[in-house]
Image (cartoon, rainbow, N blue to C red; front, side, top):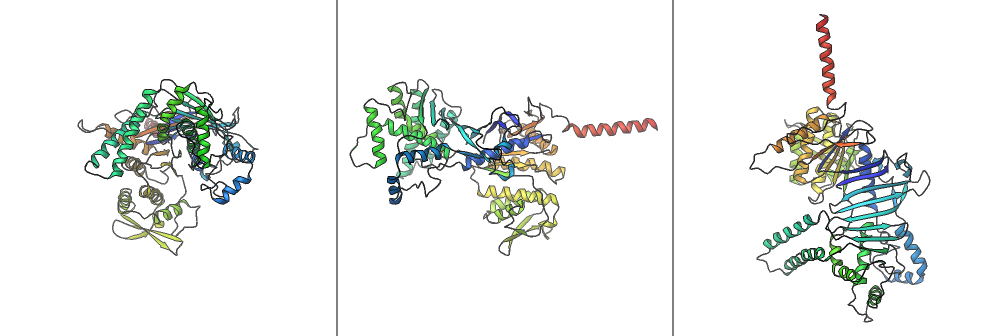
Length: 570
C-alpha cells in the first residue's frame, strides 16, 4: 500500500491522499487522528484480502470443475433463475467493519463520519505499486448493520493507464484505454528489459529450450507493450455489463473479486474480438458460446451486452491485437499483506499457554516457535537482543505440548525466564519475536506493510532512539515497509541523525534515498496533518505543534525562571 485517502470515515469528512514512504511515522497530540488512518488501512485491507470472487468461493454451489452432478444441476436450473442468482452473488458485495478486532469499529454507523451529508464511505489507495484503487461503500441496513454495500470500484492500471470502473448498482462497467502511458510505464518497461538482459547472460551457454522459451516470451512482451503505445491514437472507452444475459461465465477463475471482474472483461474482449476461428462442431459449450459472438462480429453486429460504444472498426482491431498486453499487467490479486503490531500490555507470565489467543505475546511466541527459524534470522535476533541490552540469546522451549517457556541467556551465561526481566525487555522481545518471524517467512519482493503502534512503551529514552535504527535496518536490508504511530521524541530525533549521516557520506559513495517521512497530526479541520520535511543536515524544515519538541525546553525555561527568582530573593 503506497497511498491512503478516504472520505466520510470516522473522524474525517475528507482526508486527502497521504503518500506512504518506506518508513512512515505518525505523531501529534492525542485524539488528533493518527489512529483513524491506521484503522482505515486495516479496514480497507481486510476487505481487499477477503473479497472473493463469488463464483468460486463456495465449491459446493459454484465448483471450478464442472463435474457430472453440477452439469445435471445446471440443466435443471432455468436461465432466469441462474441469471437472478448470479446477479445477486456478483452485484451484492459487502464491506464489513467488524472483521478486524483491533479497529474497534463494528458497524457502518460507527465508521461513518458523524456529520456526513451522504451515507457513503470511500477509500483511495495504491496497491502493489502498479494499481490505483477506489472503493465506495453505501449504507444498506439499520444502525446496527455490521457492513455496507459496495456500490463502486475503480481500478486504474498505472502502467498502461487503463481504468476499469464497476457500478454495481447499475450492473455496468466502463473501461477506458488512454493514449498516454501510465506513471509507472517507464519503470515497468525498464525493469522487464533489465530482467531480459540478466537472463540472457545467465543462459548464454545453455541449450535448455524452456529457458530460451522464457526469453522469447519476455522479448515479445516488451515489443508488444512498445507497439501498444505506438499504435493507440485516441482514448478508447467502452461499456460492458458486469453480469451478462448469457449463462456461461464460469471462466472467472481468480479467487480475488476485483481481479475476477477484470478477468471477465478481458475474457469478453478476447472471445469477441477473435474473428478468425470457425465452428467445427467439436467445441465444448464455452467455445461454441465464444464463436457465436465472433460470428456476429463478422456479420457486422457488435453485441450491445458485450461492447456498447466503440467508435469504429479501427478500435476493434486495435483491441483484438493488444488484448494480451492488457492481460499482462492486471493483478492476479490486489490485496497487499498488512501486519499490525498494536500497543499491548505485557505481563510477566512464566508459561505462555498457546490457547490463550487474547495475549499478544503468547501468539507471537507460539508463531516464532513454529516458524523453523533459520540460522541467519536467529543471528539477527540475538544481535538486536544484545543491542537492546536484553541478553545474548533466547530459547523457546515447549511445555506440556500446549505451552511455551521463554528463557533468556544473559551476557555472563546465566539463564533466566523472560518473566524475570523488566517490562521494557518483555516489550522489546515481543517486537523482536514478531519481526523475526516476518523476516524468516517473508519474500523480499513482497514483504508485508507493518503497522506498529507506540513501540516506545516501557522503554528508556536511549532504547526508544534505537528503535529508529531497528526499523531503518529492517527496511534497508529486508525491504519491510513500516507505518509507525508514536509519541516518542527520541525515536524521531534518531531518524534525523540517520538522515544527516546518510547525506554526509563521501562524494565517491552513492547517497541513499531518505526512507523516512514524518506526518504531524494537528487536529486542525482545514489541515489535519502536514509533513515534517527533512533537510539534508537532518533538521526539519517545518515545526512541530506546541507540546511536542518544545515541551522539554518550556519546562527548562520555567525552572530557570524560578531559579532566577530565588537568586533575586537571596
